[in-house]
Image (cartoon, rainbow, N blue to C red; front, side, top):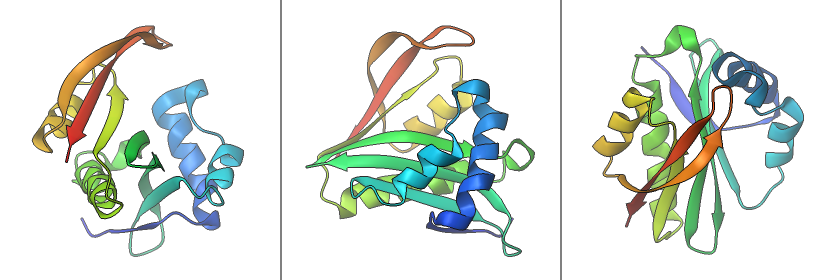
Amino acid sequence: MNFDIIPMCAPHTEAIAEIERQCFGKNGWSKQSLDYQLTNTCAFFFTAIAPDGLVLGYCGCHIVIDECYVDNIAVSPGFQGNGIGKALTRTLTDNARTQHCAFISLEVRPSNVKAVALYEQFGFQSVGRRKNFYSSPTEDGLIMTLYF
């Protein structure tokens, strides 16, 4: 599948908010929250976009000093399994390296075995858990970190 990864911009946020609703329900980011990230100097958000302009997925992180924290990586359900999540993860890890971060860290549901396996491919290691981090259903968050 052909797609590009580009910096998120205002025309993308409505489609990204819809992907958030599809993937995460009521816990997804709103369009307003995504719009705010466009002016947040600590935020680095990217969009996976098809040649026809269709938004396929996105990722975002915040960098403070030399620490990178992933906010989310999401791919539209109809386009999962096409390497988009892998490309978005690579974009975030490459960006963290470019920004001279000491590490990049994220939380993931332990039950999301595909995501856990993807992060392990990039060298992320399980470093702890956040008890009851997720809701609907309630589940711990597995903390995974890649040190540079």
